[in-house]
Length: 339
Figure 1 (spheres, rainbow, N blue to C red):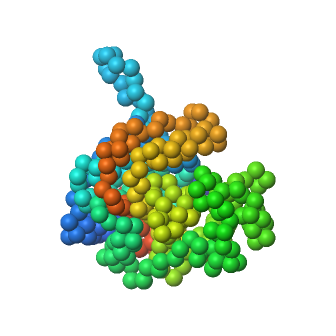
Figure 2 (figure 1 turned 90 degrees about the horizontal axis):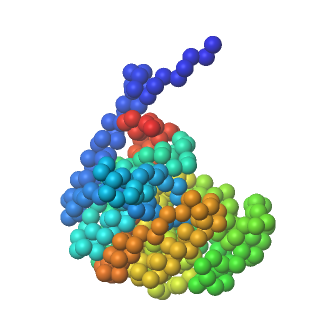
């Protein structure tokens, strides 16, 4: 008869996890000191939001805000997937340098590297560019004990290096298309022996190649900043003025694991509304009407009022950072009380 697994709070389990948790406490203390010494203000924003995030594949936890006296009807709210919208409103309100370590929530995935509730470090800088954030990342990693140098690698360079010399930007015939025509990239994927489905679009083909050939090779010798993503994958970032084929976006990887996502922030409210509406339409097609939530009008109003231009922001998974720095193989080893 197989015995039941021990609960996370069992002394034997705690003895195994305690070195990781003590390291976590030191790292979190170091993160706060890092930003405080650089003139950042630590902020706290609400977890309950009208819109939890606008990415196509995000799944959020929903709840209803009710009035016990029945004066107003219940209002659907969501546990935020990131404090991004609220923090950018603080930028619009005039705060120049802010950071937050927030509890955030994402449904639909439980794995050794993902918990549905986790800690996100986000920081934003007025008057800064995404290259300034790259410098921040390198300095933060060093302050937290990462001794290896941080490499900077463009998305185009990564595809050329790890995907048989593929020029990913050549597959984008129209850099201003919402999604490029997929034929050239699908043919390239097939030539690489990478599966693509008959109905797959350009972005599907991109990620088939990326997940199979690129991501596993990122950060094997130290942290890698993967920058200048194709413009059709801009999310909340702006196009790069010197090359409209790409956007001012980067991600950070260590040992094939994504740790962070950063933007040179888009400050054009009309363009952001178009992107939000396109994302929600794509979400509706893929997952049905129940998966769609409203566009965050208050955030767009803040953009309309005016974000500092330029400004830049980044979200970094604290739990994954602790995993990388301690060698933990399961995210539950670095959580004080796993979900």
